[in-house]
Length: 297
Length: 177
Image (tube, rainbow over all chains, first blue to last red; front, side):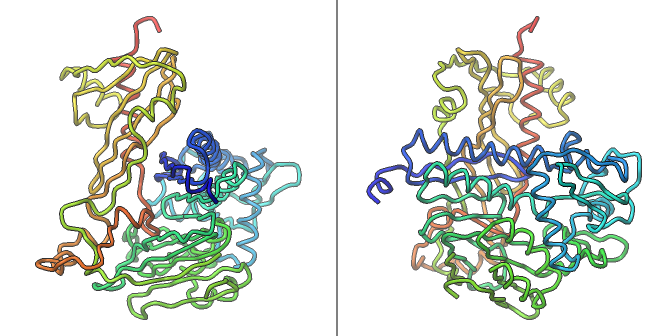
């Protein structure tokens, strides 16, 4: 490990995916580390361009304004994310659902897209990923990949850094974090669970994603609406809860936070299925640990 | 994967005076080298007139807080501009590279400082430290560089980029280009 100790730690940050993304690399010579970070940011930039709800040229926007029943050609990365999203929807009986764009627009958490056709009542079941790189919506719907794309982007960046041979790397996309390597990385969890202590997660060789609706929630039609929607009944999920999911892949951690946010302890089996686990804080019940097959628990 | 959730006593955390969270990513020179490898840089610092500032605000829809423009002409074509955005609790200097056609070639955050993050900015939370000696000297900025659960918006930075694009069009761009 002498190369590790002799090489500098290089960290950079760029604005992508609506947040600041930072990448820290150790174990590479400085110029090589910068090239590796350039490549990793290119992966994140690609996901940003393809999957932004706001950008009218993205795959997501082209899909949202496409005609119902007509296949739309999209990038292989978009296909991969949609396939993963469908898998999470299927495993969670629709609790995780990317077709919640209409609700988020209605609650003013996303901007109204410039689409003539008003969004309707389609769900994840109306999305079909065709084998030839096309996607078809069988009913009108608006997808938002905000609940999965950051985790996917982090995983792609991590894979890129691994190919470059980084011994230790940390990729942080607005709190969706992947730690590569054996050194424990401390991560502060942004939840005020006590006036005396601060929750800090130490993580090695894995990913974490956290959600708390509370910072973005707003009143709409007499109820508090946060950025998380339970796809099964299209209702806003408990906005007081703080959820932190741990998994090997960041895309799993990112997607499952939405399910744990909605289902709480009932999501333990699903977590286990993905080798994931969760820390949940509820102001009434305190901390709850939902365990899957995770080492070190 | 290995993980552990710990609850650190807040009384040991040094917060008085300094920022709760600070990370320096790149110096201006490092950003120059990364964004324009092998190039040389000629400083072209300017002070915007009131009229220029107003025109930039009109074109970009973003307030011009400082009339000082820190720009460099790049030997290989294009510009490098160093600017900063100030959010509610954070201060973010950044470097933006423009190619010879005025298109964004890259944006690098130089530094990120958050005055007080999350609960730390609440006066009630801070009161408990009054008159207390720091204990374990765990420094937030040094030891804990990551926060999960408080997604930071980059709107200030993207607004800053829009403002600088308008600044380029109205102030830096050579006539006829």
